Amino acid sequence: MSPRRAAANENAQDCKSPLGEFQAKVDRVVSARLEIAQRITNGEMWLLPLLKRFKAELATLEEERDLALEAAEIVNSAALHRAA
Image (tube, rainbow, N blue to C red; front, side):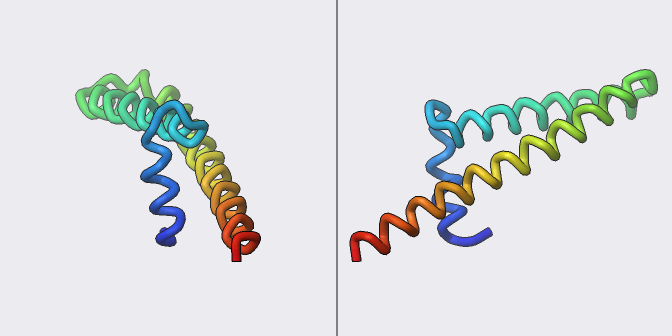
C-alpha cells in the first residue's frame, strides 16, 4: 500500500466520511465471516453458502473501498499540483 493510500485509509477510520463507511462495512462483513467460519468448523456445514456469500461481498466491498481511496488520491494529487 502506498504511503498516500495508507494516509487516506487512516483518514477513512472516521465513520462519517464515505471512506469510513466503506471500512465500517468491511469490518462488519469480516466479523460476520469469522463467526460463520467458526460455526462451520464446529460442524454447522449448512452455513457454507453463507460463507460463500460473505466472501463475495467482502471482495466487492474491498474493491469499492480501494477505488474510493484511489479517487481520494487523485483529488489530493490534483490539489497539490494546483497549489504548486
